[in-house]
Length: 406
Ligand SMILES: *Cc1c(COP(=O)(O)O)cnc(C)c1O
Image 1 (cartoon, rainbow, N blue to C red):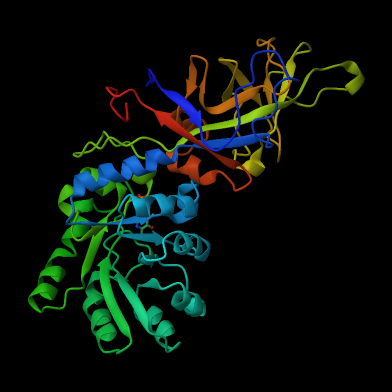
Image 2 (tube, rainbow, N blue to C red):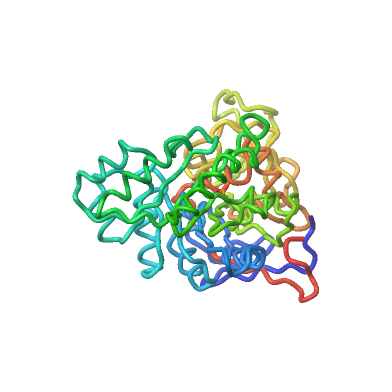
């Protein structure tokens, strides 16, 4: 996975790396003690790869839930509008507000979540709501508002969405209302892995219904069932639109499917500074129960903790990089702080950058490595990070002959 010839150039900040040993001459690159580095150009490039794969005939609804998978919904919506996505999908009002501000003219589909008490915002922000059943529809109808609607069908996820058997009745009910415009019909396929039905069996529950509706000339304009996993594994599910999330952010193994897309991760690094450094002393009393403790242990304290989204219960086998070397984490993790063992890195000094994700010298912690240490997947890492962990924009430059996604 080593990326030869890769450089990082920071955008919009005056930061430079702290040279080896000197503290006074080198101002902090950012005031924060911890930050994440995000390459927005990766998202634009991933989007272009998806467009090239699905072609012009299929719309792209960019799923920007959870603040665009931790990358910042506003900035991401701006760049994806420019990159030519057709619409956006979100769950929360906060994300809808950010996207609407950044992309005034684009449709925004609200996935199931908000209810009729949000009707004023739905009107003001021109949002398309999801309808998953008759009760759902009745609640919205009671507001008397004109509604733009996508009907959601549950093909085997066992979450939101109307059962295939009740779809026609729900569409009939919508059609009988003068103020309900059904612009789309969509599903989110199950990600239960081996449990539940395979993707093709899920889509097979919809196909005959689509054919009937088509014959009756009442098929909604946009039909959409495919997000990241099925985009990679089932090109035949593209239909009228696709709504990828994780894939846009390079959080999915893109070379494993029938389609191989040159995507790359937008989340490049998670870093924190050494904010305290010490060797224990008897005058501090009995040492607390620190895994691996020995009297000569040299501890560094990083300015990052579970308040920034680092898991609270990390094992001591988890490590970070300091000056190109690995240092073990010394649990427990605190709200704002995390201890590491730098006994074997005597050159470490106050202010040094420690790398939780990314490269330090020749050493590297990749996103899959970190996901494993955090007992989650890549999306789990990106979406665990909290707002308090500041985002710093970086751009990755590739040599012209280097393949993206290597
Ligand atoms: C999260 C979500 C998506 C995007 O899923 P990915 O696997 O991240 O591509 C699409 N549609 C719905 C309804 C979702 O909830």
